[in-house]
Amino acid sequence: MFLFEILKSIFTKQKNQTSEIDNPHNIYLEVPYSQKEIAKNYGAKWDCKKKKWFIPQGINPNPFERWMPCEEENFRAKYFYLGQAYRNCYECNKATQVNAIILPEGFEAIDGEALDDLEELGIQPKTIPFCRQDYLSILSYLTYISSDALEEIHKYTGRAYFVKKHSKVTGYSYYRSLCQHCSAAQGDNFVISEFNSVFCPTDINDFKKIKFHTLFKSIAVRAGGNSIDYSSNNNCRTSNIY
Image (cartoon, rainbow, N blue to C red; front, side, top):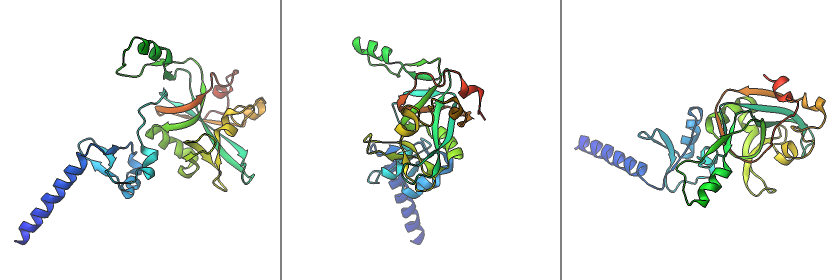
């Protein structure tokens, strides 16, 4: 009788797990191997058939935001540069490290013209068309970074200081550097986008203060902004690259 109860318990558990995995409302995640225990502690479950972690129905998805898949990346590259520099935090006024992602010549962007042409013809593309770009580009307002690339970035920034955080200015969350002293988020408008910002200085001597790391990982991102070219005199490629 005791053995029967054990077998019944095992069968019921397996049945419940199968039912949980087959639920169409599950949200599948992109979790790097090194972060699997974190996801598990949040309540994620492992689908052994798909080899992916997922959020079961009824679990709050907010803690899993960093691993959420993105179906609409608009830039991708076989490798990329991570720029690092220092600026005074707007909150505590202490010098803190800030970060930026630069794509090399040959990166790919969504081909908007091709999409427009297909739309006019009433054709729904099976895959999003991308086209090669022959310039360097610094990205801003990143709402998605592929998990392997993000894991590589965190080796240089620290996981706690480059995170996806909500912005009152933009009204949405995007990846930003946090102050190493007070944890205040450093907005891309101050760090990247504005005239004479840290990563787009007008003085060549300020540009030389930026350190560029070459990260040999493929990357796919969703960016709200990108520059057409980066450093007309090619300083990104000829100085401070590690």
